[in-house]
Image (cartoon, rainbow, N blue to C red):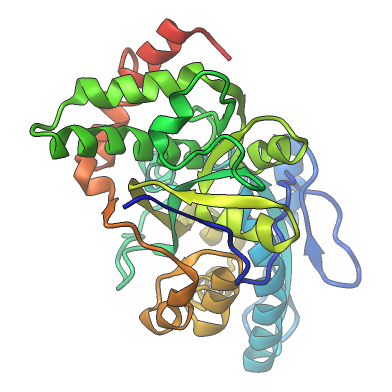
Length: 372
């Protein structure tokens, strides 16, 4: 059964992404981002303090976060809570430096020398790129949550009253419907969005008798022809939608929740078939060891799994990885009967090769449909 609903249950506002590192505000001890990407010079300046981190027995310590754009609004609330908690436990003051960009861009920046201590990113593949470069040396998935700190689903956002009558992915193929989606070459969120459409095509053909990749590609191709803008990140895509561009946006459910709770007159449409989303976090061993701040870095990573932090994520529209927190918020969500996960598509290795690789399905669709 196809579902759509207007959300008004979770108190939040959604930040429009800011980027790279700037000076520290004296009141909070937190540094935020404002340039297109962390340069080598910015990285050196950002990590100079962190290189002289004291042990957790008082004094100050610096922690650098390299996150994907949508997390800023949540971390703006979580970081002060952690700082207070850590101060009580250790006597140590934690100063944060933060960068928020599209997940793929953030992973690239870290690989190229942006010395983030912790990377909460949009998808597993972006963490794996950092692993393959030797910057993460531990088994980052070795916990009961397999390294994921938040969940969501891919959904469709439409204007108030749903004037185009959009109820499912197929409605995004209709003439005159302008669609927004981020660019999968830079945005992890975009890959989840495209996975949702492609998987829905597979599910639809399967329900008709036989799973058919050609049907899935056709659905994705027809939607692509209606795409108005391919922004760099999910946050940028939502900003474009806020400006009145497009009739529908394909995005994370939590992004829509936050926008609706901030007063935007949007409606969430939940397709019959869509994908669940899992967002990972990892400690960057090479940089943590260089900075000598592993204890506080691990402490912050562990804090992200506490009920206090998970409730912040849930208030921002994410689906918590903690069962007890998820239970508290379950009334806020609809879970479609046709929900599938990345394993339905064969796992990320297969998806990255067959859907996003050179000469693969998405690249073929771009060639056939023309660049946006």
